[in-house]
Length: 120
Image 1 (cartoon, rainbow, N blue to C red):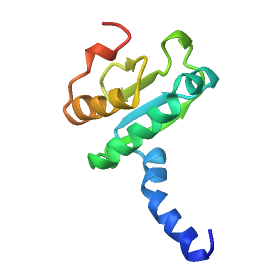
Image 2 (cartoon, one colour):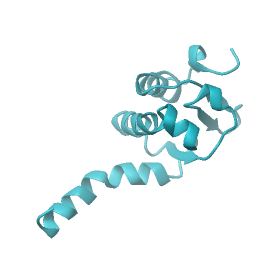
Image 3 (cartoon, rainbow, N blue to C red):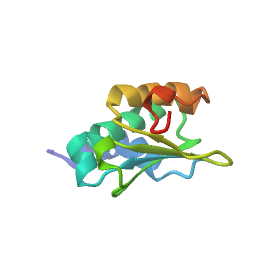
């Protein structure tokens, strides 16, 4: 960075992503980010959820957060989705491509992507 203006531009560019991760939406997407999750690729999955939710204009409805160990390391990266008055959905062995599909079909379309859930 060479100037304060560059820093401000970076802040403005990232502002939506930070707000999305700290939001108060009706739906919570929780990505397991313990050591095992990160080693299995959870960071790109988290970023893919943030990007796809932002692109789908769901940021007022969906909050993306991270947590530590979920306890099912052999299934990492693990993503849990919590919705009011619905049972928690646990997606396993996630990838950025699967995250985009979950956003489109589950978060936007309302249908669980059963191919990626833990209890089929």
